[in-house]
Length: 361
Image 1 (cartoon, one colour):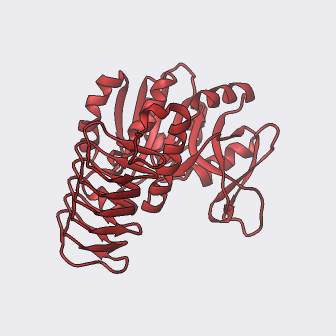
Image 2 (cartoon, rainbow, N blue to C red):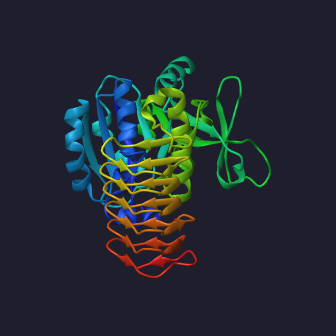
Image 3 (cartoon, one colour):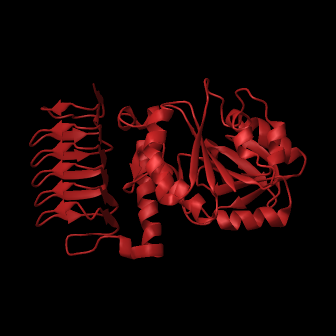
């Protein structure tokens, strides 16, 4: 069985992290985003993953070569020379996706994090006998999204309503699809939207079905949602395999700590924190709702909340970093500095406080 992951563009919303690596390789809960998806696909028997990509394919492929061997799954690239939207890449990768078996294939949006109930989706697809299945998720504010209007009992999709002014439903497209090969005949090789152009056609033929996603869902393509997604992911991990989470007198709530990280005395870590490989957290540090990437050093009595600390950065003694501060790779925050929502580009030294959210070039 095959799968296509829509990797696409430049990851501008997650800068400055994506100035160092392509977005799918940015760690989320101590593992590159895309690996969460590839592992879930492998677990249900997918043998080949095609990455639809238009940015730095060499970097991606060099990185994923190791995982090909480790996970025993074939990973290939389908490179766009121009952005092709969300459907064009399927037409471009057509020859890689069709193998004559007639089996359906998965399509995933690379920013989506969830429990990936792909096995249930395969069963759902088999039972309804339509041409395409999409995963939908319930949201509190449907007016910000494209809403999927469906028959509750069967899941048959009736129509799509883009950013509805009046309430038509609260289910939105979750960016996980299972498609029969025949869907590829409906897609031309040009910039096309699968949500706005392809799915409405299939729905009009009564062949599109939606399954409500059990568990959590988040599009983690921007910092605020990345932090929220981390909370939801760790909550789900607590239920499924809590042994992976840290515990001890200095841990509050759900915290993930790489085994090579070192944590000093008198710290208070959590809730909703991920600490990556090789990190050094000195004594008396306070961390909450944050992601600390590989090789970071946090000095004594620093306090970090609701922020992302990029690879090999340093946060000085008694520094305070909060309110969606994002430090790019190798940023050095001096002692006793305050950052209120600073977005700091790689290789910078911060010697004076950032008092309101701003980009530091």
